[in-house]
Image 1 (cartoon, rainbow, N blue to C red):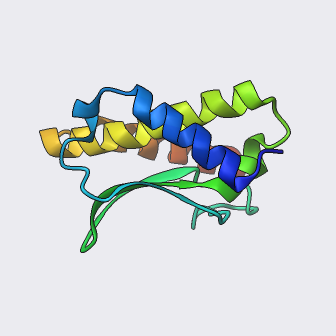
Image 2: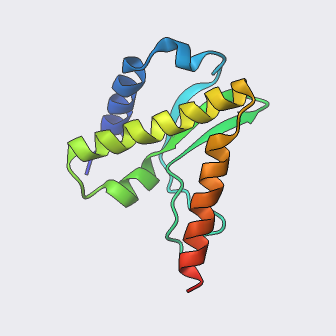
Length: 123
């Protein structure tokens, strides 16, 4: 399992590899937080939030949850964890860019994914 600091370094490398333009107006940057975050609609504490795009009085920023990433992917190889971190970061940065563009396609996609999860749990 990768340590918090190792994941932070990997996340920095991934963030640095993306075009700077994607971060326009992301004034709060990208943070890694240690906790596991469970979705409030999780049926059996089995739906983990890996990352979030936030807009609040602190600004616009992305949060990645180390605990959730490790809970879901911690037994995978370093390469697989890197791949998943990249996917999560790109997902959250896309939320940011869609917000700036006045688009909500990814929000709709996330709602469909949540509805599919809830339907599976109710069977």
